[in-house]
Amino acid sequence: MEAKLIKKAALGEIVKKIAGQKPVYAPIKEGSKVHFKFLKKGESPFLDYANTVNAPKNLFFPQTETLMHYTKTARGSELVEESETNGEMVLFGVRPCDVRSFKLLDMVFDQKKYSDPYYVDKRERTTIIALACRQPPYSTCFCTSVGGHPAQADGADILISELDDDYLVEFLSPKGEKLVKLFGDLKAADDQALSRKKELSDEAVAAIKSHIPATEIKTWLDNNFEHPFWDSIHQGCLACGTCTYLCPTCHCFDIRDEAQGDDGIRLRAWDSCMYSIYSLETSGHNPRPGQKQRWRQRLMHKFKYFVDNYDAISCVGCGRCVMSCPVNTDIRKIVNDIAQLN
Amino acid sequence: MQKNPYIPAPVKVEKIITEVETKDIKTFRLTFLNQEDKDAFAYLPGQFAELSIFGKGESPIGIASSPTDPDYVEFTVQKAGVVTTALHDFEEGALMGLRGPLGNSWPLEYLKGKDIVLVGGGFAFTTIRSLIKYMLDDRHRADFGKITAVYGARNPGLLLYRDELALWQERDDIDMHVTVDKGDENWTGLEGFVPTVCQDVAPSSDNAVTLICGPPIMIRFTLPVFFDLGFSKDNIYTSLEMRMKCGIGKCGRCNVGSKYVCLDGPVFSLAELDKLTPEY
Image 1 (cartoon, chains in turn green, yellow):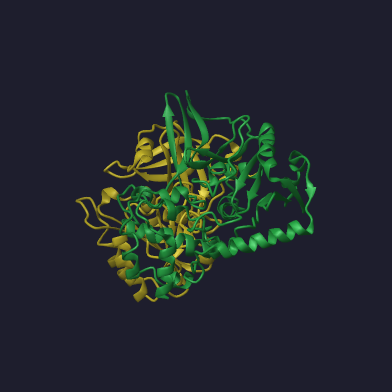
Image 2 (cartoon, chains in turn green, red):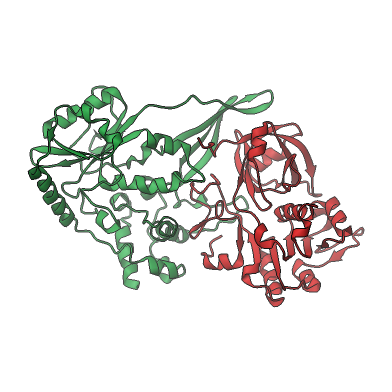
């Protein structure tokens, strides 16, 4: 692993330079919001952001994605051969919580028996450049409660940490090292820089004030599928699905066909366990008929089912669902309340 | 490079058999257009596949044929939603897609050397039919002990696979009981509900496994009969249905607790189901 230093002012230009060579998906400011978008030619990323509104999962698992094309022929509908996709991409400016989300999504999409070619392909040809949190961006951040860290980014190819006048750039993987030359004049990081990084990293951890007993509620969840507690948490829910759409780890999707004349596509689009038709069967039977069952499913999936299957909590503590819920449902409060029932 | 699990293999609708008098359940015999797809579709009784019609979508359906008939794959489908309605409108010779095989199967290794009791009700007899054909095949029959089957429908016109049922009733290597809730003037067979017939047949639970498929009400009243006969929950199996999309454990919706019906099921023992959340 190489650790280098660059002047703070240089980073925007470096990313712009990379974007001249390959597509770069990075934070962009639009109005008062910051979103991940592909940089246009000559465009610089927005660096002075807390975190983005949308999670970067959209790059590997787009909100809507064409799976295949078909066309009607005399013999019936037939598949149209797809052209090979290729080319390296760069995902720049990912916060450590969101970097962790990729490790969790990999567990679902990159399995031995059934590997998801659409996700895995884009994931493999993308280099991830993480930007450590010098300060936790929001009061709702709780990454350290769910196995994360504001200044470490296991799974990133390059980690950039803000020091005082410089950025410390750590090339963490062979994929990351391939980009070294695009960073231009790099100064080797001295011990002083490394110890400053450690200091700031400890400060960032200490600055996170939101803590939840995320692992401690597992036993209660194991034993309390039926409990009066479940009658309360969904009460305000509008079933809008915002929490699932903004969540970096939610991966549910629908598959649909869309036809136009003789041609059509089979696509997948994000779906949400918060919606009534999500599990509605053709017969009219719905295993999760009410918002109570759907909320229980969402919570159980993140803090129990995913743990059972992959030994990891399916939450990275980014706080997006907390910040954007229109009725202020707070997953931190729910987890805290469950811990009280223990 | 692994095959893209979302791409259906092209198949031809070779034969369509209308199974019931109400005409809303048909069996579709499909043949693969490409040899490599046919070779890749190696399945066991109890598995399912996604029937794929471009422009309409996909529908997960249990496989009704047996791998002992290798030339084709059959699905018995009730006309219910968008995809199955389009399928019912097909004529022989139509082209469509098939994606699978998916899910686990009936526990064939576990069943070997044991007496087998099969219970089916109404339309939920398709993957049991697959298993019967498999077990009765000369290459497999010796692997299993006594085979007892109870199959019931509301009336004679709603029984599936009537020709095969008649043949099985004449064989001495399967004890086949066919019953209807209410017979008509031509009906000479059993009359009565499936749980009652099971009670009368009273198969021994000694070294025996029962596989039960049917509407929830039938299962509810049949289970106590088998408990009384001494069958343990480890030796009672059933097959679940849930709404599905991907069929490969990614799209999320078919989970029952930590298990995905598409990957870990559709076949579960009662002992396994007891450990899951009752949400199906």
